[in-house]
Image 1 (cartoon, rainbow, N blue to C red):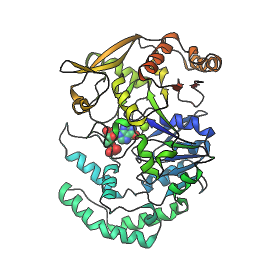
Image 2: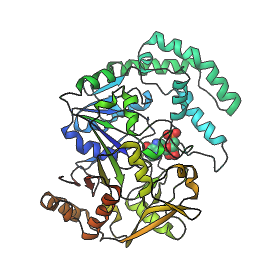
Image 3: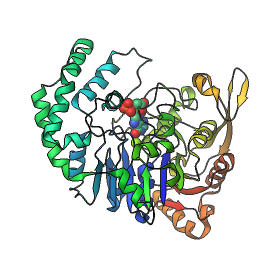
Image 4: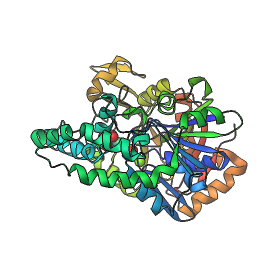
Length: 434
Ligand code: IMP
Ligand code: MG
């Protein structure tokens, strides 16, 4: 059984927590796109794990795989493995086809962003993600199989180095470290990581019968390179279809696709955000940010805060075909007197509930809100009590208005609710029996 867990908004929906929650029943957890621009937080037994590259399944000691659609920074991976206390080759596998992020990628990312005018900046995480995918598409990329083979690695670096250096220096006035230094460092990294080499496509396709496999999306649907809010997007495909091309998996083998939806919306970096809390609502946004710890896991930047946007979620559903939704961070909305939900948008007086060509004019969208009554601000102990009660009562254990809010979203989207999260810990999760 293969289940994909996909972010339905602009990332940071809480996929790491959901993967960790579901991983107890999984045999394999696989990442298929993105790189260390991602930041997945897993809290278990009071300990907070933050992962940028490692699949969140490692906390539950499940075999974790990094597919060919990921871009891999070996500096970050070796550090993450050692911070975690080490992983052996049974715990982790990396596809031999996975492109490697090289030092010139991060330098280019930062230099290029720095050269852009205000208003044009994408707000990248500066981790070299875009340039690494460009190099892959230009068919000059260094892959994991090259990294772990000293001879091949030297050849591959030599083939591109002088062009990359010239580019950095002449176009951006940025310095590139000497070739010998990069080569020495990456040969060493390759030796450390060599034991993890595998064919993820083969493993997953073989395991799909009889084993439980979780596919862990990174970023979110609205950051998709083709279907997101271009050009304010990432360079990979975080939608469900991206899992097939990012692993080398037949689309017919994915049996379940589930979305993760935060009960409010956040976005980090630039780009349109129609339901953002700005102007007179800015203070409310700031208090949600504080309470929800809405600061980037990777960059520490303030996340922008806004209401749920149903037309955008319907669009995400169209792209992904969700069979269920995991709602997260409901506890954060406790104490907000009135909760708004964008049920439609207007452009030039014309209303729509599900965007099509309107995706071209996101900047001009005017939200049409439905306002619902908020619910009380419970303590974490009280939320845990709600979770205990939910074992019998299901979602009815929620404060009445919180229940009504989730039911409104469920009704509007027409998608089953799978879980509702009311805290960061694995156990602070209401499981919905359907
Ligand atoms: P890049 O992926 O670093 O090129 O960044 C492109 C855009 O995607 C920026 O707006 C980033 O803030 C955003 N982004 C990239 N990764 C994440 C993520 O994991 N969560 C939220 N936003 C992200
Ligand atoms: Mg994140």
